[in-house]
Image 1 (cartoon, each protein chain N blue to C red):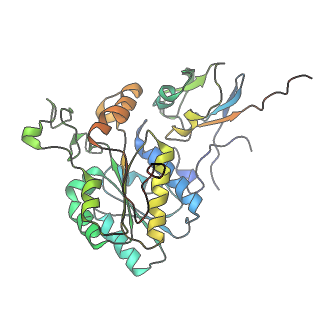
Image 2: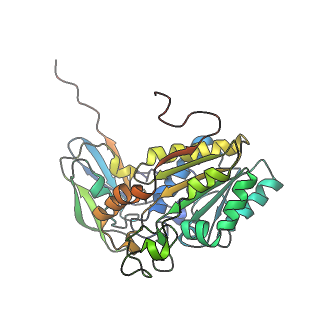
Length: 86
Length: 254
């Protein structure tokens, strides 16, 4: 049986941003690659007892942090654009 | 089941989190390799050989047949596997210490014989597992455990240009490229082309990858990216160096 990881999903304005604290080692590579610089350290600890990251509301859901995570600890899904009224 | 990590299908999920240090480039290279294996659909016939050094920590990384051998001897072992069963796709995975210093004779001989295997060499400019000593690829002026005042090219020479050397000694049909973990889409394309080149039976495929080592560089995330994106490409030119027959990436449009 494959193991499953506990997810922590944060809803921002434009995305559903998920981190798996059981995979995050707190290297911080994602924080530097974020084009909006909207990631910061959180109080939730990762697998090595280091802080994990969390996004602010400025997240645009581009998924660059997901691409550059060496541990696949981040999963980003963009919210679908809401249809304008009328 | 709730959301699960977006790992490549060929990764072995029950051995994650993997054994590499926080911020290690191996995770990124193996992610790109996993995606390349997924896209080519060769998980059942690929053989992954890892070397001595940090690269051996990938021994349980994939759901792919894996073998672990001595310094740089991954190349001849994979060569033997490929000769015994040409249907396999042999991937030799090594670091710069194993590939360029201790086991360079195997790399040179396999390349000049034009063996139909794929060699992936991860270059982090020093020996990571033993604590960060100077390697053939250490940059001039870079501080390591054995060069505390920075590497002096007068005394210890200039960094090894591995792909250029391999490109010079291989015959027609070889694929030689240098990728970087700062550009993963390009890296995945290079790895995919290298595997396709092997499956087409053209010849030796070699990809060097510029990688990170925050533990031994003693850098934080910001300095790590600066090192990979700015310092390393000053001595190691990223791009395709030798392509069988066709045009190199980016040259088609003039």
